[in-house]
Image (cartoon, rainbow, N blue to C red; front, side, top):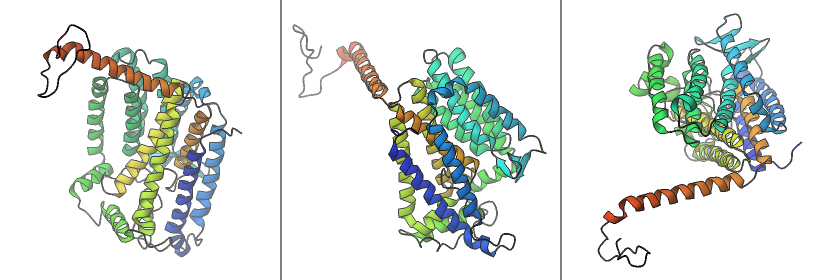
Length: 412
């Protein structure tokens, strides 16, 4: 097993997972003990620990696979993801929840294909943006082909419907495009129609439409807005230091499915403002470590891959917290490493494993190259500004500008 990986990233990830396990047990134990169909306070704890073990295995595997191998099989990952997404449209295979078919059933287990698809998209973009680095300024030859492939998978996810996941993947993709220097106008050519299509889809989807209207109006506290209102009460009840682990009351049937998308409300109620800040600080720390790994990656593919995976974790955390704080409409996005979930947890831990593997190849060459490139760009820009505008500048009273060239008066 590799040993020269980023230990700070690993330790922070383990801390977040530990917080998740404790909070899930706290949120579900009383309810499960009183439920005659379950009758076991440890029911969800046992299930989440099984998933943590699966995630740990996935993390160990990806940690020990050279990340450069992924770019050889990016088409395989894309095709596999597309097939899995297609299977969600087959009623005999797909799992239905609230009218959405986001899962496929494999015996007693369920798999969420969109979780696999998001990593496949990041791997594809990392490879494509590295290979096409010199042609990305060209809309038709460089940028458009990638957006067609990504857009197709994102559209398939939106049609499940899973608009929250579709938006999250689109945001991660946009960040990857932006970082490598795709012109903003090219991104707008695709982004504006995409946002319009998303808005059209949401407005014609009863469940998603109700969520957006409830968010905008702030009403329906006993209907579509019930969960948000109760989560805000939980956060307010926790005050500064919280009620203590296990002492929260909103989990007692006030907030349905509190252990999934709204686990952050449990943290706020039982660990208080301090607990929520600590959790957000850990996500920011993971983002910082991921960025450092990207800057020190030995090649463009590794840099792009680290940026994509780090952005994925950060975006998902930001969207989840934004929903719980009522800053965004409900998206159904889980809180990475903490929310109860199978596919999401395993994929998130596998993604950290990939980041850890990239960190084992760390070098300062790319970081230095990026810094030098930025300095060169600034120098070139300043020189260009000087050539075009220097002769028109009017010195500020009390100051003189020296040209630095003998024989020319100040101000020239």
